[in-house]
Image (cartoon, rainbow over all chains, first blue to last red; front, top):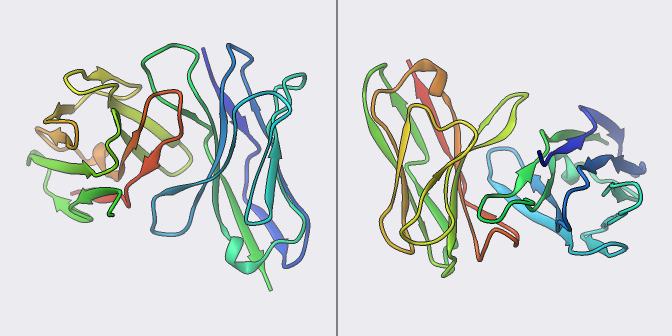
Length: 113
Length: 112
């Protein structure tokens, strides 16, 4: 079935370091892809999205490119801040009509000053 | 514009008690969802409602029931709470299943 696989965390970085969080998805259908962010004690917020191959989603300095050939949607940021500490979830739309978004298990990012 | 509102935000139940988690959206979205979040498990879908008048089981429906009261409201009921249902519960909505979802702030439930 459809699935999303994220790199396991936690990821621990120093401020201003480069961030990559890997995400791969099962190659069924033509999904839209998303990154969500969850700050402590809050719900998930949409960070960025891409709806077709080669699209690049971007927001708040984060970027991810929809790579159909490698079935990947890796999240990157050139210079992380302490305020980026959160849990990041990769997600895809389902291949089967009438169901729900499929999420990865989440990657915890901790940034220290 | 509140978006997705969940009540209550926190709840402690005794084993065997029942309760209903409420979710309301003012985004005029068709689809609504209930997820639970547990450490190391990510988000797991409990039930969803693709449109008003329909509900379907997700990955972990046992021990739960839902009601899509109208387009705005989607409630989750625990008939006889168990410690294994201790979790954070999130309601989400979307225009359709092919679009992004918007989440509420969550309900933190502890069953003792």
